[in-house]
Length: 427
Ligand code: GLV
Ligand code: MN
Ligand code: MN
Image 1: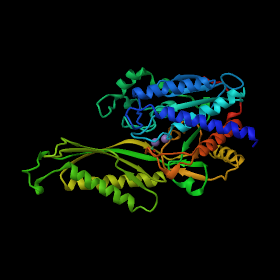
Image 2: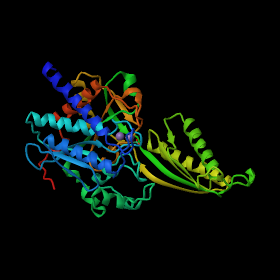
Image 3: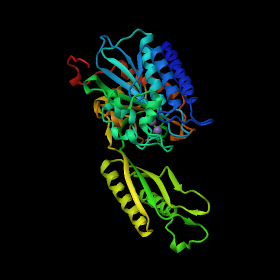
Image 4: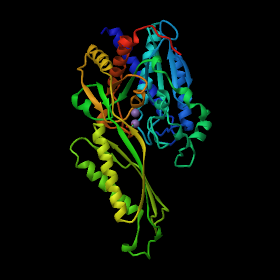
C-alpha cells in the first residue's frame, strides 16, 4: 500500500468514528444509549443517516418499515445491486458499535468510490435496518424480514410494554402499516448481501486479528413464558399453601441455567426480562412473565434443548400448581454464509496483509433474514474483550480502519456469482 493510501484509509476510519459518536448521541435515555424500533430517536437517527447517504452520492429514502436505504448507481442505471448493511436500532443501555459500525462503514466505502468518481458494473445499496434487536416488540429482525419479503403481518398487532401496538407505532413514525409489503425486494435485484459487524465475542482478540470471515450465523429461539399462581397476603398465607408465581419463575430460571451450563456443546440460554405482578412488598406475586433466549451451534441441538427446557418448566409449574403459558416469539434457523462470498472476503483480508481466519457468529444478525432473498457474507471486526450489549463495547481506531479497508476492497473487486452474470433487468 502507498503512503497516500494509508493517509486516505486512516481518515476514513476517523470519519467513521466521528459518525459512530454522532449516532450514539441520539438516545431515549439520558446518560445511556437506548434507541428502540420506531422511537422518536430512531427517526432522528434515520434523518442523520439519510443525510450521510446523500452526501456520499446516493439516492436515499426511508422504506415502508423504517429502514434507511441508499442507492449508488453502477455504470448503468437500474443494474442489480450488491447490498451492504447492518442495523441502527440498539438494545437498552447499549454499546455504540453494534449495528451502526456496519451501516456507517458501508456509507464510507460508497463515499470513497464517489470521491474518486468510480462507478462499478453493479449498483451498491446500503441499508440501515430499523429493527434487528427486537427489543420493543416480541419479534425481531423486523427490518430485514420486510426487505426479504418474510415479514409476518401478525406482528403488527403485538404491543410493546406500554401497550402501544406496532401498527400505531408505525403511524406515529410516519409510516403506513398497510404498506409494509412495499419494503420487500426481489431476489433478481440483489447480487448478494454483505454485512460488516463487530464480533461481539473474544475470539478475534485471542487470535490477535483485527478482522475475520464469518462462517455461519447461529440460529436462535426466543420464548415468552407466563406463570399464573395466586396473589395473596404476605403475612397471612402459610408457606405451604402458597402458589407464588415468582418463586416458581425463580426455580425455572435456575433450571434453565443449570441445563445450559451442563451442556458441553455450546448451548446458551438467557432469561433477560422478568415482570412480576401485582408487584408490592407485602403481596405474594400472582403472575410472572419472563423471556427465554436459546442458542446453539446447530439447529438440531437448539431444537432439542428448547424441547427439554419447556419440559422442565412444565414440570416445575405442575409441581407448584401454577398455570403455564409458553409461546415461541421468534425462531431463526442457522444461516450459513455463502462459500463464494467467504472466498472474496478472505481474498480481501489477505490482500490487506492480515491472516485469514474463519469463525461462526453466536450473535444474531440481519443476514439471518436476508438469506431468504440473497446469498449472505459477513466480515467481523475485533472488539475489546469481546464485550457487547454493554456500554463498554469498544473498537480500536486501527481495527475500524482495517474493517473499512477490507470492505472497500471486497466491494471494488466484487465478482457476482456465475448465475448473476447474464444480463438482468430490475423491477
Ligand atoms: C442480536 O444482537 C442478538 O443476537 O440477539
Ligand atoms: Mn447487531
Ligand atoms: Mn445486538
